[in-house]
Length: 432
Ligand SMILES: Nc1ncnc2c1ncn2[C@@H]1O[C@H](COP(=O)(O)OP(=O)(O)O)[C@@H](O)[C@H]1O
Ligand SMILES: O=C(O)[C@@H](O)C(=O)COP(=O)(O)O
Image (cartoon, rainbow, N blue to C red; front, side, top):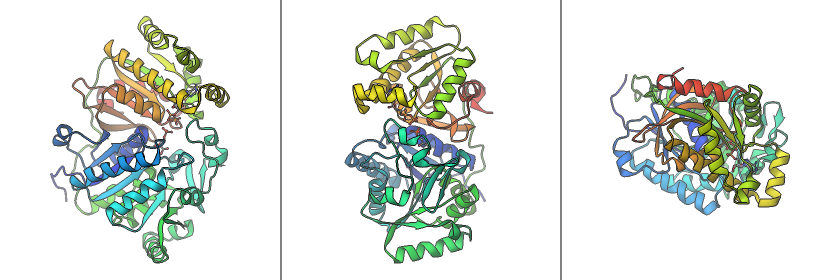
C-alpha cells in the first residue's frame, strides 16, 4: 500500500554536514525521499518540503557541550512540530568526539525531551569497514585507536572501547547489546533491550558486524522514539515504514541537472583524502595547496587560489590536506582551533569567489570543511540523489540557482573519488 502524503516520517539530527549527507544517502537507498537542511529550516523552506525523511545538519560535533545540546533540542522541537514519528541522532561511524563530548550529552538530552528512557548507540558502518564487537569499534582490521583516527585534527580517538567512551559523556548508565544476542534475531534483541531497561541502562552500545545485523537492529527498534548511531543503523528503518504502508512509490534519488563550472575543495587531513589528493596529483591534474601558516601570516591565499582556478582551463583541486605530521606542526604553531578555522574560512571564501565566476558543481572533502563551504555558499536545503561511493551521494541545493554538491566525509570514498564524483555531478540529475 502507498500513500500520497508528504509528511515526514523520520526526523534526523546530524552532528555534522557530511554525516547528515551520509545518513540521507542511506535513507534514499532504502526508498525514502529525503532532504537535508542546513540548520533548522526557515518557515519558507519548511512550507515547500516534500519528503519522507528530513535530516537537519548541525555543526555540533566539536562545539562546547551546552551549545550542541541546545542546538539539538531546538532541532528536535522543530522535527516534532512536523509530526515526525521517530527521531534519529546521527554521529560519526568512528564515534568522533572531543575529550568533553558531545554524543552522550546530546543523546541524553534528546531522550529526556522525548520522555523516553532508552536508546541504542551504534556507529557501525560495515560497508565502510566500521564494525563493533563486544563494544569495541574496528576500522577495517584495526581498533579505532590504531586506525589513524588517533591523529584526527579535531577529534582524536584514542580509546576503541565505546562503552567507556560513551560512559564518560553521560550520566545515563551505558550498557552493551552484544553480538551473540543480535545474531539470534530481532525478537531476542527486543527481549534483551527489555532486560537492559529493567536494569536501569539508558543507552546501550550495539555490536554489529554486517548489514544483516543492522537490519535486525532496525527492525527490532521500530518502536523506539530515538535511535542514535552512524548511517548504518538507518539501513533497516525505511522497511519499517514501508511495512506500515507509509512510503510512496517514487524514485527517491531523482535530481535536477546542474550545468556550469566545477571544482574540488579538500580540507580533510584523513588517510582516505590524502590518498585521493595523491591520486589527483599522480594523474597530473592541476592542484593548489593552501598553506595554513601563509593564511595566518595574512598572505593573499584566497586571491591566489581564485586566480589559479581562473587561469586554468581544466578543473582544479584546491586543498589543505596534509600528512598527520604536517598537521601537528601547524597546530603546534597556530593551535588546533585556529588552524582549523583559518583553513575552513579560506575554503569557504574560495567557494564563494568561484561561484561568482560561474562554478556550479562542487566536490568537497571533509566534514567540518563541507559545513564551512556550504554555509559560505548560503545553501539551506539539499535534495539527496544517487550514491557516488558508500556514504556519499550526489546532492543538489534548493538555491535560486541550484548547485550540485558532493560532500565527502574525510575517510570515505575510493582513491578515484574526486574524478568519479565530478563525473556523476556532471551527468543529468547526478544519476549514475
Ligand atoms: N594542513 C592543515 N593543518 C591544520 N589543520 C588542517 C589542515 N588541513 C585541514 N585542516 C583542518 O582539519 C580539519 C579537518 O576536519 P574535516 O574537514 O572534518 O575533515 P574530516 O572529514 O577528515 O574529519 C578542518 O578543521 C580543517 O580546516
Ligand atoms: O559516519 C561517518 O563516518 C560519516 O558520516 C561522518 O560523520 C564522517 O565525519 P567526517 O569524517 O568529519 O566527515
